[in-house]
Image 1: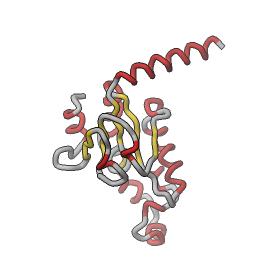
Image 2: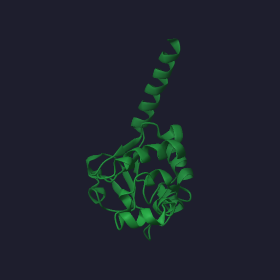
Image 3: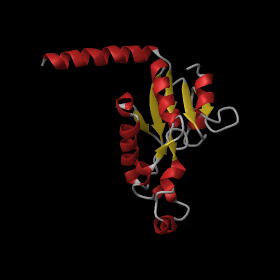
Image 4: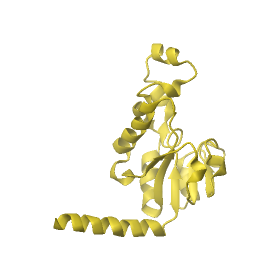
Length: 166
């Protein structure tokens, strides 16, 4: 019983500290996660079956590898910012929702505990920065600053970290 009180106090203290930090949302596919790495692990006959809608392949999102530098960048951002994952999952692939949660637990662990939001309208969330590789699903209308990953200005995680002074 006493232990639960201590954990609760620590959680409350961490919540207060996070409320004082600027909030950063980070997309998954193409930012934290190498989409192609998962696709490359799917058998050819399965890829052929789904054609151009490879995002509907059951289980694929759990097979993806992190992008180079992504895990280190996540950890470094967490030291300075209130960091959350903001991703979209295909509506017609329910396993993708589960797979993304599994991926977060496997690669980001405790630092991402209860920090995953899946939304088709990223502009509904409030934050200071959104790191995303696209402007789709409300990313282009996000009220904070969009840092468009993979562009000339932000081609990799080093340039993002330098910009955010991490």
